[in-house]
Image (cartoon, rainbow, N blue to C red; front, side):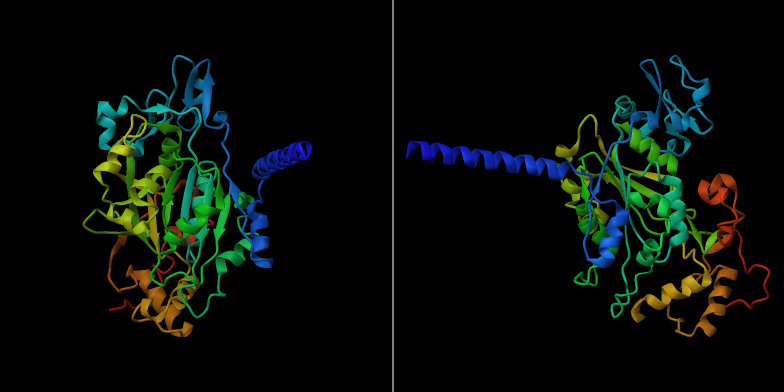
Length: 416
């Protein structure tokens, strides 16, 4: 009887140990790449998880003995252990501070800059980006940021609630669009049970982050929209350094229909500053992953004390040149399709479902710089290299419809 009890206990121990090792083996296996996820999504309705990985430091740093220079901001061939030679537009001992950050007030505060230092293990960047037909802007974002952003969490929502089958983004991905980059995509399918007043970005936060494994508290979340292109230099700095304050509010230079109409307003054509960059730890503890709480921006004293540390100061600051927002920067047929897919209550008041009437009308809006509310909000702008997203400028022919007003010389009467 005693021997039987001993054998039973031994068997139980073996079973428990086997389960532990099986679990460790399972979670250590490489997970389905997004291509397989898209296939399973269409055939079985399954979802796969993207495993976040660390990139080697040599991808971002040039090493000279024990010294480091940031590759992005350095002339590596001319740098040495004694000095990092900075490229035009970059500064700092390691050539890691881009010009776009020089307006940040905290950079002139010794208490904060004294703790600023490069990380040996760089941060991962997770960009959450809802889309609604803004394919050109997304293509520019992906190509410009691929080696800086670790994963693009994307999704679309059929706003016409009677037609959930219409998901053009998913169809484009299935057909191989941006195939060279899909290893960094996580597509979040639209939820039929989502509340009608729920934002798509909240859905990406709620469902998209569940499709990522091995997230760390210091991973950076970039919350943006399909109309926005983030300045690459900003993300390089945030990825490589620690000690800068969070959260970060973003202001974008605003354009309408293309980079040929620059929007004007009380903020010199810039968008209203909104929190768009923060760490996973910050988002979880200060705002409980809720976009409504983040928009409110209030943080309790207890939470501030908990989050503040030497490596992570707590200070709300604004980046006034974080990137470009190109509103309604679509081709005329795609813009018509975007409006047509909106529920009637969200469509422009002048919109009808007749392409014969609407396409010429939208062309007139583009010609004279009127938005969907028929307000003249733009001034003519000649795109220049220094003021445009680099990938857009370098691919001028590909984005020609965004670089010059295609209807500027056409004889179309202005809309009153």
